[in-house]
Image (cartoon, rainbow, N blue to C red):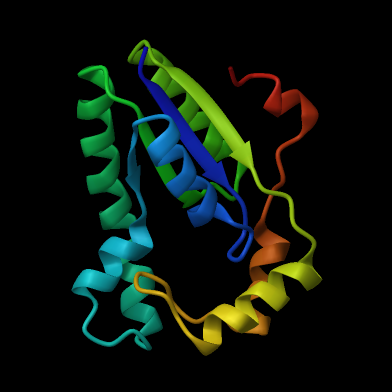
Length: 155
């Protein structure tokens, strides 16, 4: 049966590493908005344009994911899924397609996130963007970690 994998965590938590492992072990298509945005963004330092592109790219990726899931293929969404509401929305949509949904939450302390991001910032891999300490601290305030109750909803 097809499975939708939701990869949840802040930048630097290891989402891409895990998603790439799942891509191989689960024979699933991995969809990363940052990689797509990097292909079309002319200036990687243009943060307003990067932010503007995120929603339309994720919408296109979700439409593709639904078609693939409906065809019996597994998909990995490497989006971060910072809010419980967002995770619940995609869980319900995927279940309405008759597929399994798995949530992988990467819980990493802020200090370790910043250590990883500092290293990554100094030699950015393709499909990634610099993250400042200020942005990480701000995003950490918005992030809603999944509760034990929420995690129990996933197969």
